Image 1 (cartoon, rainbow, N blue to C red):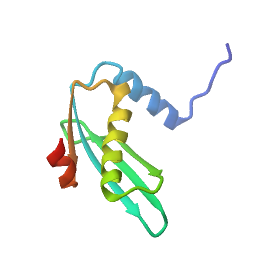
Image 2: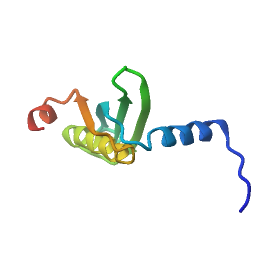
Image 3: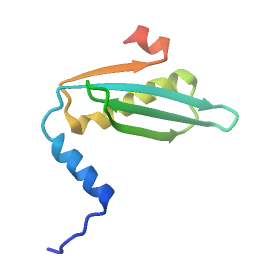
Image 4: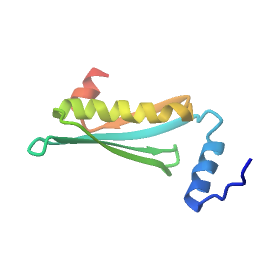
Length: 104
């Protein structure tokens, strides 16, 4: 097997994975979806913090043309899918979408 050299940011990711290999007790997630109807673009983002307020992850992605509510839901789904490998025992989700808050 070939010996691999780790780039510093890869080493940080590897350490994060090894540290979080155990189930994370509780994570706090802030999500948001945005739309640009004139350009037929939408985006989703999520920030993950531990209970001490330390930012652990910041994820963002462009998605296709969505309505505002679809983008907000897509942001929550995006965050939860990315959290799966971390196996958190509890997740608090915060969003600025009243629709999602009322329906969840």
